[in-house]
Image (cartoon, rainbow, N blue to C red):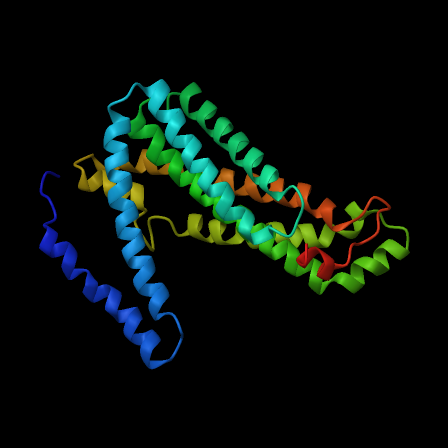
Length: 259
């Protein structure tokens, strides 16, 4: 697909931005500034990343790929940790988790020749994996805090009956994992039926045969699904421990929220 989108056509997209802006104005949602700022910021970020990728694609793979992946993982870590900033060691847990997941995914891709070790393939596909893992970790942290706060009494009762923190937290961890995995399960069920996934659509627009595009889409879709699962497991199995003190007593959630 060699045709380009003109600058004037991009400006016309402001019409689509004005739809949620108008809704926010009439229903007094208080989102007008957020809608405008996020739209402007998103456009600027995309153009900047386009310039950066153009530069990185011209570097040797062993230089360009690690640089971009490091930036992606670092930004994703800072963003995901905001959902659980009251908890100790959340930054290192998220950082190590994202690095581990990316190493596992890259190892599988390269070992079975699913993708080539080139910036054009590794960086965009890794970005999708890291981005979805970041969302899953943030969602898991948020859901876990909510579950511990809601089930505070039940957990205390279980501990008083002799349950270990792991046993008392079993239901909380299970609900956290469900919350993180169900959206991706539903999305995987309807893939290709309700929507044509982004990667597949991009490849088709780029002139790739649909069957080849579908194969690449399957690689990234299954990789994302596995990465999201690992992300939720890592956060859930590590972070629940910090809701208890050294005497295996449940910590007051308000104290955790207050740091």
